[in-house]
Length: 416
Image 1 (cartoon, rainbow, N blue to C red):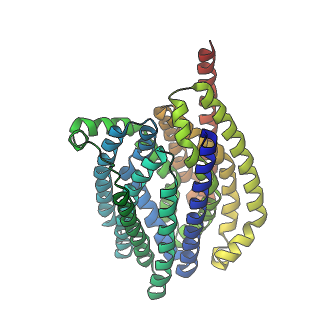
Image 2 (image 1 turned 90 degrees about the vertical axis):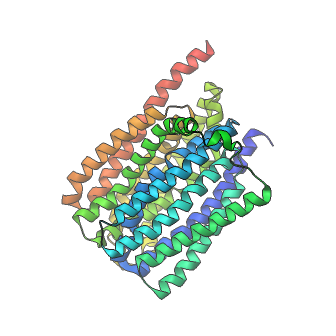
Image 3 (image 1 turned 180 degrees about the vertical axis):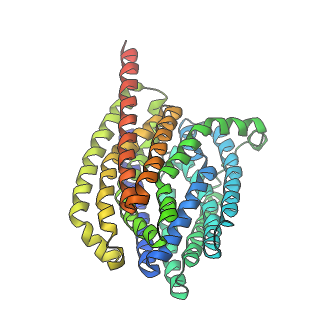
């Protein structure tokens, strides 16, 4: 199979798996939102946002690092990354448990139950990164679809028994636990040794080296999660939990629209990492093709969702979430920015410019938080939406400007 056909094959596999998995997760969220109501769904969304903030420590940017080193055939480095991930995952869970004591009992149990699920999620992601680096996507797609199907089925049962945020949190963590069991069963059956040299892997200097390399990515990951999840936390500080639920309803649909770009980048990041280590000209050619493709797709998808947005909200969420529609239309502007923006930020990682990525995201996160402090108290959830749109546009334009200058200089030098 040629390299281009391999990319298309991975794109199809990732697309199929992520499309089915994301659709099932979308149904799970929509059913949960409708059955629980805006307030109880707000509790779940708030707890999920807190767990995502702690997940920054769990993942520590190690997933992208794992893909890069496996793509470059350095499996010993991956072994050190995998062991480091176990430590960061446990520390991240400790942070979730600690945070839970600052809230009432309802949020306490929701947070802790979700935190257990995030531990399984963190470990699974590193394993999937190993196979992404090898450009073998079937494994991840198979497990993802199975996990989301179990999540959907168990949530139906638990919501029938108890219509509460802790109930769907149990469904969330249980499905991830079963996914972990299936992952390790497949690895054991295929006799895959992820940690190839234990005597080297567990050395302190190896783990410290991984943490140093991953630190810029960890900062970026943390800032990115703050960037996208701080809205719900800050809304909860100024407005009722019902508003958190309504805002989350709009954001859920946006997450569905963002599916396609994530599929494309999951299928192509390994190739970007290879070209980023070997040829500026090949890298820039692929970069430009992806940029044109993603800008075109974003405009098409936003036009479709602008026309059909009200139908989607009426069908899945119902009358209680009608106020989400106005927020959704504002957030569609972020989709236009983030389709090319997602690719640009992945390109920076592929050419080992994690620090530049970190500086851009740091600046945008500060801007986003400041705008939220200004807009949320006065304008509520629409203020949060506009804060997100402004910073998404800044992030994308900054990344594109840096890549343009960087590659023009490097390609001139390579041609000479």
